[in-house]
Length: 274
Image (cartoon, rainbow, N blue to C red; front, side, top):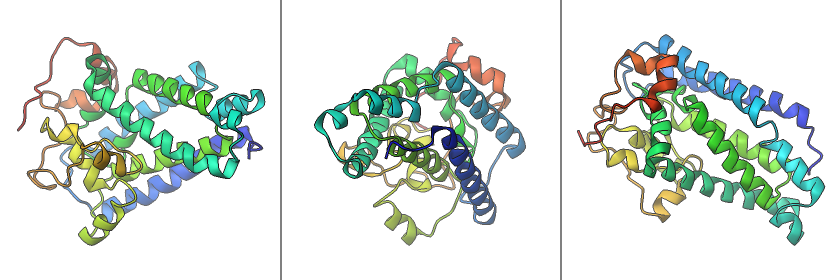
């Protein structure tokens, strides 16, 4: 299972990213959940520009994160799975569950610890909510997240294919649950049993401070229910709810350079409920 060609992984990820992005972008256009208030072209240029910058930062400073770390762990016999001799087929679902649980708690820490929140806040200051929002994270928060993933990989020693699946799953579900896609209520209710849906995660992007501390899950919806952070719907409803952070809803929230310096400014956001 560790025979995965490391060199082919980026092409696989890029191909799936583009396929899912185009599909969701078309579906958003055909069946939008909310009316977007700001220029999509400016927001997309900003959000995907930041995403490209993040990819460069990780490839330069943390080249062994992900599949490379899994291959190294396998060759050296590092990690719990290797020490216990757990079969590859069993280790894959275990790793995916532990990985997603780790991302859930990482997300909660980024909200609870002020320096981390100031980095993560950039993601929440998107003035609208669509498929591009899932790619909008500060480079420093991406580096921290990548180091956490690296530590998890070295601690568990998953096979390379498990890491590739986890990265693809996180990327795809992030685009899906941030999409401005209107799903039939009956379908949304059923999907929430297995995955985080756009309506579920949109609550987390409310300007209401209570609501943006709910629904932290990215892939699987179970952790929020298990740890008491689940909220089914926003108080104002999805069409009327306000997106973003009060005090960060001007043109500076859709320009790359102001966003990169935003965590280091002295201004304090209004964290009160609307």
